[in-house]
Length: 298
Image 1 (cartoon, rainbow, N blue to C red):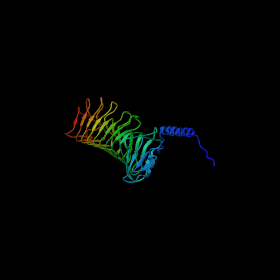
Image 2: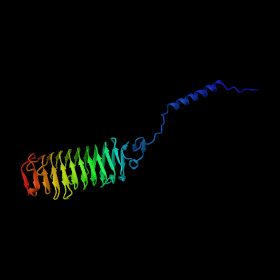
Image 3: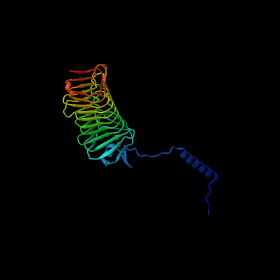
Image 4: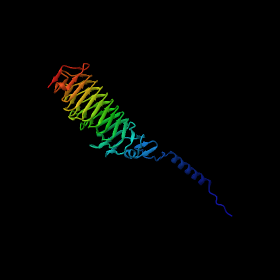
């Protein structure tokens, strides 16, 4: 019987080669395969798109956005449900001219947007409701339903729409900062009922020629621009002001009144005469009201 005996040198050589190979493998960077980050979550459930999350959300749930998003098409809410959209300090934008969200039913509460940008941010139709708690928003809000603005920063730097456009809907503003940088459009345009309880506003307020138009202001700081009067109250409309500070820029009036205006409080300031009314009997000014100059009747 014969046995094959390998030379010790060969064994040592092969062992050294194996040792070196294992060492090289250990030095390679670890390769890990991770799933793509979801657009949004509802609890532990992950969704690839925000549209899918809104289609699936149930009453009382919160959608949490997980990354910055850009959409080519509007996202619609067509169901009678109520939920919170937590932007989770992320950005959201749309392609030029695209409305970000169209609400046809239900109620959506939005908060914590780092910056949401669209020509029209929210289009709220009759029977639907929107609430905005905080965050930064660049674009317009069109409301035919119910809208509540509780805080946040709102502007419209492209100037293609009004910042707050209440079209025969019901809108309540509790606070926030509102700026219109393009004087071709209003900061606030109203043909419904809008109640303003506080906030800082830069730009013109238009209560337009509709019998349905009612503007009620109890607080806030308002400053016009160098192209128009701070508040325009059109024929057939109703304006009630019980508090707030209102300032015009240049030679413009703080209030240009052609409808019915009732001022029971507030301060109205400009470089000369702050108040103008087409008919004297249509402007009622209480004793607590402070205003520059005299009331001009035209």
